Each structure stands twice: as C-alpha cells, then as structure tokens.
Length: 227
Length: 349
Image (cartoon, rainbow over the protein chains, first blue to last red):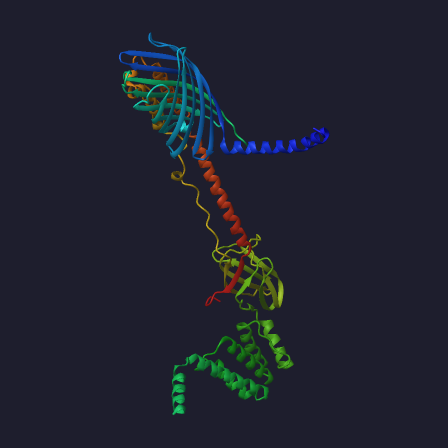
C-alpha cells in the first residue's frame, strides 16, 4: 500500500497474462473432460412397508447434474436433487428430501458399463431428520436404437454399504435402473427410472420392514465442446 | 610325354572344331591371297582364286561380306584387263548384295572406279546398316539410322508397329548415296513408341520407275522401375448396405418394448412388498420405452436410407480413389524415367 501506483501497474501487467493462462487452461480442461451439465425434474416416491403399516409419500424433485469424461472409456457424474414429498397414504407424513450422488462408470464392452457410486440422502420432517449414506456397485447395459441416436439403458446395483442415522443398516439393499437417452452432438434428453429397495430385519423394539425409493426423472443436458 | 599329350589334345580339338570355322578361315585366306595377287598386279591369278571363292562348287562357306569382296575384286581385275562390261556385271552383283559397298580411291584406279560408278548407275539398290541394340532416353536421344541408295530416288523411311498400319515417316524425299537420320523412339502423335515389334521400312523409287526396298525387324522395350498396380473399384459386397432392412425397424421397436417391460418389472422384482398402491412411475417409464420404440420404428420405416453407411461408403471410395491417384502419380514418375531399348530381332533381318 505504500506504492499504490506501482501495485496497480504490476496488476495491469500480470492480470492479462494470468487471464490468458486461465483461459487456455479452461479450454484445455474442456477439451479434455468434455463436461456436460443438465437440469433434472422428476417425481420421487418413498414407500415403507412394515407390519402392519404401509406409508407412501411422493412429490416433485428438481436438481442438476454434471458429467465429465476424464478418460476415453470412463465418466464421472455428480448429481444433486431436492424436493418435497407429500403424504399419499394415511400413515405417511410429508418430508423434504435432498440428495447428493457421485458416480463413476467404466466402459467394459461397447454395450456394458461397470459403475460405482456414493449417495448421501437426507429426509427432514417436522418430527425428525434422517440421513442415508450408501455406496453401490453395479453394471449397466446399453442398447442402441436409430443407430445410436437413442440409447436404452438397463442396469442393477448392489448397495453393500448403507448407513441410516438412528437405525441399523438394512440386511439387503439393491437398486435397478431403466433409462432412455437421446443424444445429439451437444444436447442430451433423458428419461431415467431408478428403483431402490432396502430390507430391514426385526430388531429389539423394531419390526421387520422394507423401504423403497423410486425416481422418475427427465433430464435435459448440454455438452460443452471446444473447437 | 607332355609334348605327346599336347599333340593329342590338339588333334582332338581340331576334330571337334566347327567345320564352318575352318571353311571361313579358308575363304578368308583365299581372299587375302587374291587381294595380295591383285595388288601385285597378278590379276589373272587373282581371278582364279576369286572365282573359286564365288563358285557354287566351292567346298567352303562364304559369308555375304566375303562374297561382296570377291565380286568387287573380280570386277576390279576385269576392269584392269579391259573387260569393262564383265567388270560392271560383277560390280553390280556386289552392289546388289551390299549397296553400301564403294571403291576406295587409294586402292582402286580411276578406270575401276569409273566402271563401278557405271554399275551403280545401272543398279537401284537401297539398304540400311543393321541397327545395333541401343538404350535411348526418349527426351534427348535418337536411334541413328544409316541408309543408302545407289541412284537418285525418292527415299521413304518408315517405322511401323507390327500388325499396325499407323507409324511414323522418318524420311520421304529425294536422296542419293548414304543418308544419316535418327528416330527419337516416338510415334507420329508424339507419344513414346509402346513396347512391341517394329518394322523399319526403307523404299526407294527411282525416276526410271525401278523400286527397291529393305526392311529390318526391331524389338522395342521399355526399361523403367516396376509399376504398382492400382486397387480395383470397390465391389458391392465390400460396401455397407445403404438402406436399412425392414428387420432393423422391427428390432428397434422390440428394443423399445423391451425397455418398457423392464420398467414395469423393476418394482415388482425389487420391491414386491412395496407394490401396493400401483406403480405410476413404472408405468410412465414404460410409456417412455414404448414411445422410443415406436418413434424409432416409424423413423426407420420413413427413412430407410442409412446415412452413416453412405458416409462410410463415400469415405471408402474416396480413400481408394486417393490411393489409386497416388499410385498413378508414382507410376507416372517412374514412366517419366523410362528408357527405350531398341534391339534387332535375330534371324528376322
């Protein structure tokens, strides 16, 4: 601060070079990872079946997703969803839901991917807040329609690690997926249907129960391209 | 001992030596002796030997050159003896066999040369010197040709491919005596003469109407680095079908319906206990699968042309054309360095 003029001149000299370097780095990163961003709107449904009760809540969720291709046969996705589920059965209660998921996929065959993902999901009602943390591994197969302009996806996952706050972990957790995606050079439109099932064993003070989440989401995306 | 062995070997070699060699040697010795006698002005004795050389009953083989030499010296001897008409007759015999023959002023007298000139005037003969094998650069070299006519005559020299009426006229004009011309190994249209067998025609038409002609058979070959073969055009079976078969549309529909079935099955398979209250999301997802399949089916039926196959086929054709163009360019470079080899055909002169 003793030499404000000198500082300003130095900044003027350094900033354009730094900006150019930053711009080059961004272009390089875009070319290397081919990022895509997409917006998601979906319908989420949460069901609980416990002897003798049955709960069902559903509602609209909104979110976004970022996809990166760091290597030719590998991709990484980050997804965030949030919304409010309204009670659809007498015993159910409304709740807010928020979810953050990171997933990586590796192409094993032209029609088969293997993937692994971690999800953190939070249900918050007027009574309590419950956090789910889980790690899944699975596979997805692709089938091509219209010479690849439409791609159908079907897959399944095991969820070997599930942590639910305030509860023991489920004895079985699986997920399955069906999706349809239409892709052009830069735009992608997709319909994904995801089903998750969690079986909880009867423990002291708790009855045996099953919980399930399903999401039907429409996703519109844009992939950045660098010439 | 060694001497005896050498004699035996010499005797065997003498027995096995070709008879023609011995005959030629003998004819040559006779000619040498006759020339020596002629130069010693013992022309009568020379005539005896020379007549023996050309006699049909001569046991020795006589080459064309030897026969011509014998006729020349017989003519010269007769001219010395004052038998001019006989001398002219023998000179004509020599000229007919070798129109290039001439009398050296240093060795023959004026009287002999006058008789020889008379013989030339009475004999129309045209000939060309045998073409020696030669390698030509068509851009700069010429094949030398030496042609002679014994009288003033309209001389026409033509190079013509065997079996082809087209050719190139190398000379067509009045001429007498020896004339040197060249052929640059090109045809009338300027193109390099293609490989093959060629006839070199020489025809002389004298003012008296007398005609004589000669021909040489030549082989023309091209000497250049080996050429590359271009690739043939792509056959239909090497190209992708540019229209989708109907089964592709049905397959797309089946895949869409399959996705719909998977969507309906997911909640049943994974959450049978949670299926109460219906599965509206699964039904909506199944509807998406059906819509994708039907849309793909309709699109396939409406647009059966496989654009990707067309692009791929076009790319293949372009690549092949580029490859062949490159081959043609390299071949053109090699052909530009072509050398023409012209060689007489043995036994066809």
